[in-house]
Image (cartoon, rainbow, N blue to C red):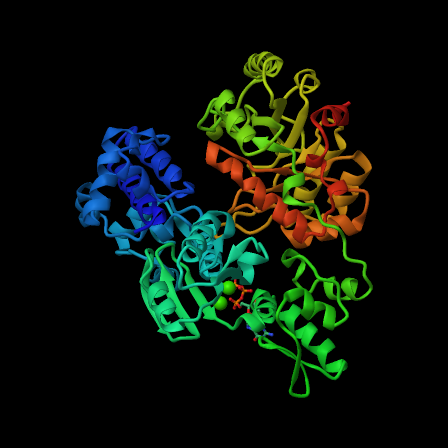
Length: 568
Ligand code: DGT
Ligand code: CA
Ligand code: CA
């Protein structure tokens, strides 16, 4: 059982209650589901300590449902509703434009329960003749279903699973059977999504070590089990490979299994050109092993500088390293502030005081409070009056606090590229990020023009989550990035790297392109909507590193005072 499983149950209940026409409950269930989904701790820990109701949005009644699920694997409310609505809501939630009520209509009229039967009905053009649908919406649905199926290939945003796998590694390390345990693969490279986990370990008793691994908490299925390689499925919906290797080849195993594949292939070619052989066991001249104990040794033997795992994507890092020209990428601990956060004043869950305190405990020296502006109604956006009131609160908070709060806004860029708040109130702000959230169906040139108009306005400091992609749900907006980068450079507008796991936006390859464009700086933001989300700044930083950014490229490395000057 996992947080995700429970969260999906709660979302399902919300969807079914919505079909039933129940008023407030669906929203309550969704809030609770979101809390659990983004919790960095197993929810059963809270249950065991009797602290379920301490979690945001989890009251008595929902905590009873969770308790029931933990104890029995079922929620009676869910089972009862599900008999009436045997629909795959979990998938349909990710097909755009297919809310619970429409899904129910399709079920009632055509018996559509899942993506298979939906695809079939679309193929047979059965949907366009339904009342309330029509040809256009059938086409739309076909497109959105296609997107869902394509994106569904089972990758998970790293930010949702990194704590889980790091905890697992920590618990293995505590066991005497293991002399060494390390994460490799895409997780070590901090890629924005993960297909499976890769762990390398050293053990003098591989049989028992593998036995222990395959019986760990969280294992739902053993795919293969042997003394050198074991693969299991984990309850978070990803599988995990573990390999036992010899200490003498640990470095080359780490190098090989960190990848990525194309990076490895390039290294192997270099080895061959030097008359050497490279594999996961070491570097060999003939049959003599000349490197492999350490990763540094592997790179050095090939004439390369050692490089951070985040850089290993075959994006020019091998060549740069041959010429000793690798960038000194920004360090995680150089990030002083978080430049994108929300409180319950718009659609966040916490107070300014609690958010700031949590950020302070994470080591931040300042945060920008960037609640939504009025134009984003579904997020309870704020008008000028409410922003003024909050700004006043921030002033008084700052006067007696160690961590500083910047007065900010995540400002709607309206359909025509104009801005949602007056120049007057914007001039009272310390940090303004412009964002497109609505009216996304525009031509690429119109979308680009809309964004550029906002950048040219001279009123915004940064553009939030520039591509507006949602991993697994929605692809990037078809923007012309060369033009966007030009405009950002000319107007000194920052590009945000949003660390919220299913956004991870700007993606790292575009970050690298923006940096190569020249003259562009970046701002990092967790986009926290509740306390634990503040940790997502780590994912922003990872993307910055993967995009070759140095501390000079990232404004979060400068002091609060210097940041304030930026706006002037
Ligand atoms: P993922 O799991 O899709 O998120 O991405 P990775 O990079 O973790 O890929 P995975 O788990 O298939 O393999 C782990 C590493 O093992 C990969 O990054 C590089 C290495 N590797 C896998 N297959 C090959 C291969 O065919 N050739 C070479 N040279 N290396 C490979
Ligand atoms: Ca992997
Ligand atoms: Ca793997």
